[in-house]
Image: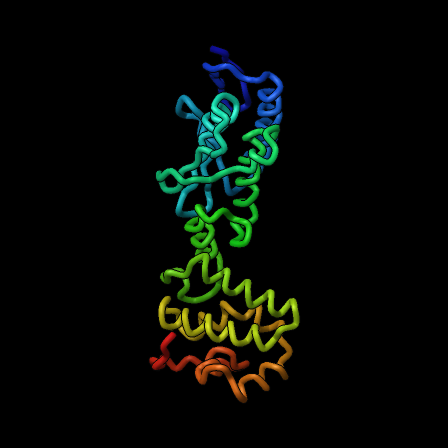
Length: 242
């Protein structure tokens, strides 16, 4: 067995390993330690026999078993990081397969930087959806969103609307924004105002005259409720079906 002193404790390795790869892991661990120490979103827990990196930005908590990640990569050729979310194991596969020289600590740094960036929906692994969406709900200013079941698929649909805008396919974007809005209203129980705020980052990029023209003959009659430039929510229940 080999004992290695690191910035976060003593790493004990029982199996055979490549010294060069261990050196890469230790270099990465030094950088990881520095990044975490300078981040308000993470902390290092060294109270147990193995160090854990824990998120410090609200629920659900992310916990990374640093030494297990390293030994998995060094000794077992395991492509997974050892991560828990709210004390449940989650599958996070690295891109080691594309480059086996990448140390596990480099992959951990990527997760930490995701957290520092606010768990962006577009870049967060699907298995950490709960964390990404939860962080968005906690930090966004959209009223009432926190208590809804909005999920990754809704952000993906909004991203599709954005791609239509990028391609100047404005009518297609408006049709999809209307469809998404109706779905959020009926299935996710969002209010009209909440939906208007959610789709606003995309809708505001569409020329106003094209929005007006579309609403003269919308794909669905209730599109005008969500896509109008002056949304009014009088709390009436709309007879919309998806």
